[in-house]
Length: 119
Length: 112
Image (cartoon, rainbow over all chains, first blue to last red; front, side, top):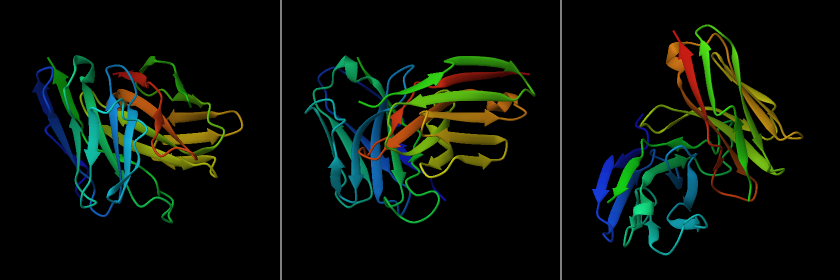
């Protein structure tokens, strides 16, 4: 079946602009996560959705970052007034409903990422 | 803040060798640990997931172990192949956290 997809694959913008990054999770997965990966580092957690609600946004670096998931499927990560330090690969992951029975519950499946470059 | 450390940062071995990648974590309330592979410019591919109640998981030539008491996990790769060349990341999910905490990865090169 189809995996997690993310669009665009690459985004180049100018400092101060607004960007939106989209994530399509695996069909039926109710949990959705956003991470940010800088060069040479492991991904860092940003925000977690269970269904439509942001259950944990403790990883968002500041109030310029916001994410929505209005219908419990597709999610959009929004960054206002972009800064050069926001340049990174933004990864999205999904997993089956947290706590669901089965040996692989909570396994997270990642999309290919969006490479954001802020000039 | 929980931390995950991976040693070594880079490893180069001849094709055919068996090898072990190490991961240590500080979270004593770990919920599960997941190993990923990342190819250059690509996303993460899940390799193995070990629940806190398990000691190991196997998939093909890969075997991952988990020792909660010592805060360590290992990924064993048997009969390495050039196609195994990639960065390998381990990540733990704590009982009190929703996201994964990742190490920086081990960059593995298998020489033909």
